[in-house]
Amino acid sequence: MITFLDGTLHEALPTHVVIAVHGIGYHVSIPLSSYDKLPAVGQPIKLLTHLQIREDAHVLYGFATSAERDLFRLLVTHVSGIGPKTALDVLSGISVTMFKAAVVNGDAALLSKTKGIGKKTAERIIVELKDKVGIAAAWEAASAAHAPTPAETILNDAVLALIALGYKQVDAHKAVKQVQEKAAGTATTEELIRQGLKLLI
Image 1: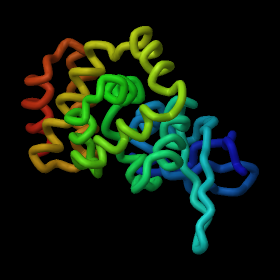
Image 2: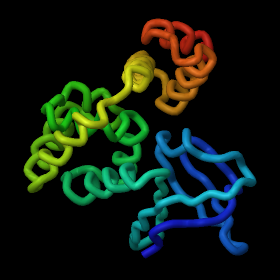
Image 3: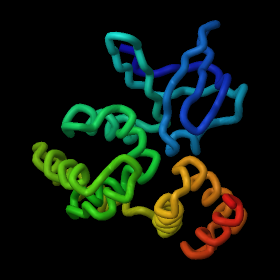
Image 4: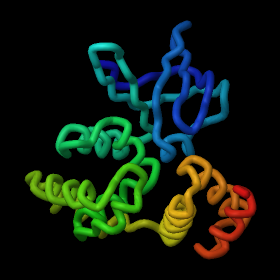
């Protein structure tokens, strides 16, 4: 099992990276949450990984933090009907903290706004993960200690609004992030949506 890669960032896209390790380039699929934390191309990088072995391929998934990888594994292992691609979509559409809070609070509406997650799947996620011994209690404690910052909530709401308007998740996230950085974190959700639309049109 390949558990992490420590090398040089050779290529970086919102959906995957290529990491050079001792002359070998590893293609690793990543969520948007990890893409935001990447160094510049050519810089050293350490990425946590999950290896999926299929009949036709060995696929590596990469994560900037252990919390992201833990949630990915939880989804693909414990929630029926969720594969690696949907798990990456979940991590790309909502922060780990907000996801945990949604499960603890039974907020299926929030989860179902994420790409690839319908209302029934959102309800199944809540039921199946809440049933895991200790998960809900641990997450409840963590949610209280690490509630999403106002800036994270605003960014997430703006991205979800743009996705609802028909824009791709990757494009919506990139536009909103750009606007938020330009405004130095002072923009409201409405301003992020309005300025984000200008970049997308």
